[in-house]
Each structure stands twice: as structure tokens, then as C-alpha cells.
Length: 68
Image 1 (cartoon, rainbow, N blue to C red):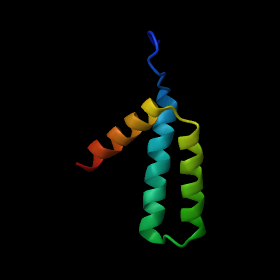
Image 2: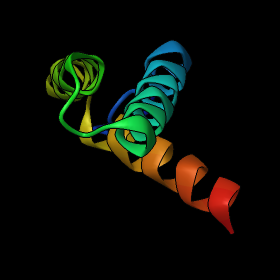
Image 3: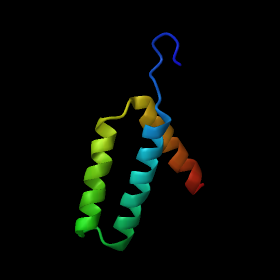
């Protein structure tokens, strides 16, 4: 539940962003010219367009802490 004008965060959307970002990274590690990478990139960008700024922030934060 949100209060005031705070943007809502859908945990499922954050998890989706994290999963798609990881899939894109793994596909890039294999071959950035592959169809698999282009599909993963397109899916990531589509999910980003459907996400609130706070959801994007939470996903970036989780991905950043996973690599540190």
C-alpha cells in the first residue's frame, strides 16, 4: 500500500526486470550478434517501458548488489 504520491512498486515487475536483465547479460556473454540476444534485449526494453521509475531503481539496485 502506498501513501501520498509515492510510486507503487510491484514486486513481480521488479523480479521480472531482474530476470530479463540477467537473461540479456547471459545471451550477450554468448554472442551479441545472436537472435537470442536480440530477443532478450527486446523483452527487457518492453518490460522497462511497462515499469515505474521506482521499479527500475529497485531492479538496478538488486542487480548492482548481486555483483558486488
